[in-house]
Length: 113
Length: 112
Image 1 (cartoon, one colour):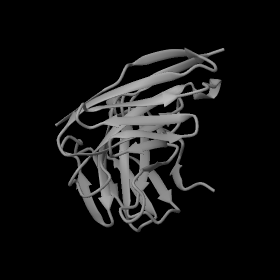
Image 2: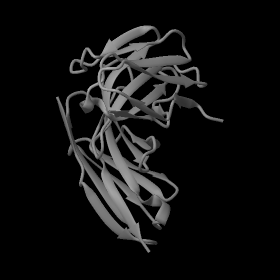
Image 3: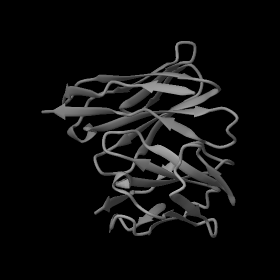
């Protein structure tokens, strides 16, 4: 019974070709996060949604956008992927009312050719 | 700002005990988390400390000293499946959410 689902698990896109990664959750958590993780590095927070409120990290490039059409779904849009955007993208959720830890999805590994 | 330091890599033998240290410098500290991450997989939650002391959960224990900006994760009776990266993450107060800053992780290799 998956709780945080990410599709696809592997995504290949071409340099400059827009790509969308998706995340869904069955936990009904009010906060959703997107992280970028490159090999042997720490997960880096790109942005998060607190309910419908979008919160961008100061150093997240404009190339990265996000949408959250409802509680369950959140999307990461990369408008013009560069070679440096190749990474694992992790979606996570948390609930400000009950628990404190973040639940992570399995991640989408993005390759840019 | 914040700074989180962990050893890059550690090795240990099956059945042994290993301690993974984490030091941090951050304003508005509001809790420290340990996550386990197997290669190519998502991080999974291991433990949470917000007060000083030791939290024990089966083979895993986590310790926190807020005055020293120090935590460790203790793994007992090591198994081969414990080979993974262990991420220390700090939560900051008054961010309004469970916003975490992760260390780069300690890669643990357990050998037979």
